[in-house]
Length: 352
Image 1 (cartoon, helix red, strand yellow):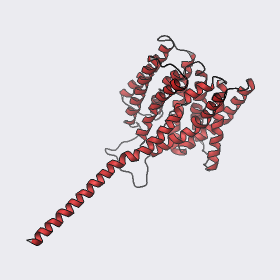
Image 2 (spheres, helix red, strand yellow):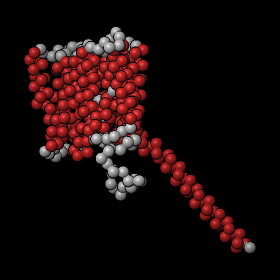
Image 3 (cartoon, helix red, strand yellow):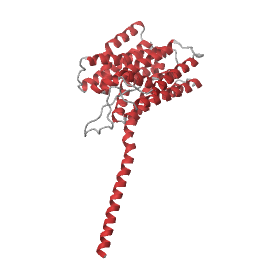
Image 4 (spheres, helix red, strand yellow):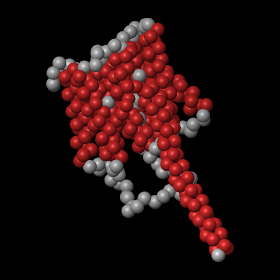
């Protein structure tokens, strides 16, 4: 009997120990989940905060210098840094059609977006520009859908269209009434389209060249054109501005067009990418806040309401797309777990 009791006690102790270890393991896994997502979210947030100053600082810089010089000169500064980074890390040269695709990326995010926003913000308030540019996540998702021949549900198109209508309505109201758009609004919408094309193509190309390498090669490829435009603007009129305006210009070249991408792409690389990519929806709100705090711009109800509707629409459109699959991809009934050491590919996009 004594032996039986000892045996029972030993069995119970062993079972209790096993249950305790299992509970501890479950608790550790639960605790580890937020810790594993935190680094990616923090890096992504750092990139978004860096990008959120782009519109307000562009508005500051164009207050004393030519928009052509601001839009092209900042790309030249970033290209010098990109060339140094590519050389020091000995990155391989792109090949064949990759140069053509880099030209598409550069045309959107190196040439189109900086120049169009610089000219637009000579007359449009920074907060107004931030509301229109809030369309960029949804526009990028739409471009990626078209580029990848995806077939998202009807809800995606409805939500994306709602965001576009809200942005146009907000811009019209701020200009004095519905249907009244200025050239600055058209330039801002053009900047959104240009950046969306560049980001969508860059997201695909980054799978082959790497994330920061893609934007760096695009900067280097466009540097002859942007350098020529910078010289032309300098010849037409010597750039002159206050210390604050030159500081804003330096920020645009060093951070907005170069260093910010490192933080953003590092966050996407650490992941999880769907959660990290949603952080960019905070960028327009931050830009509007900076415009009010740093530039003293008045926030009207149309700006706030339009910004909220556009941001919510963009977030919903991105979420709907993340739940769809490209049409040309065959989907098995159940996903197969990747082998050890194999990382599944994923697209990467960013809002600047």
